View 1 (cartoon, helix red, strand yellow):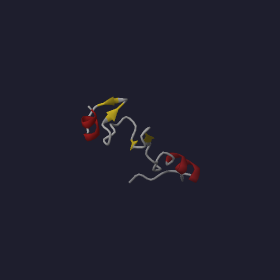
View 2 (view 1 turned 180 degrees about the vertical axis):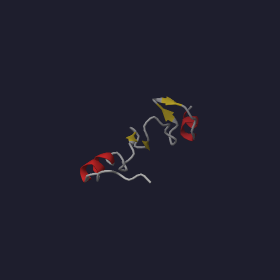
View 3 (view 1 turned 90 degrees about the horizontal axis):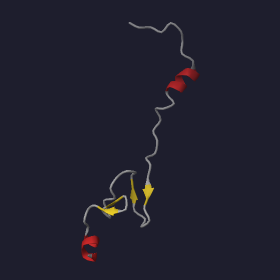
View 4 (view 1 turned 30 degrees about the horizontal axis):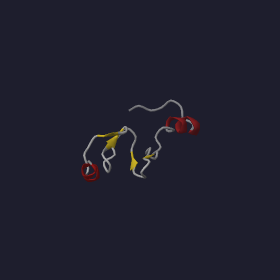
Length: 63
């Protein structure tokens, strides 16, 4: 069985664990107030990078 030769200090242990924390996801708030994740399609409006990708009820009725 592997046994460490020396005890790992609290500082070294905490430095190793510095990237293990849970971070809040990034959120983009659109001009119309809808919320989406970055680099994702806005499912409520069907818009991605300023283009209408998916037709929705509002977009279909406006045409």
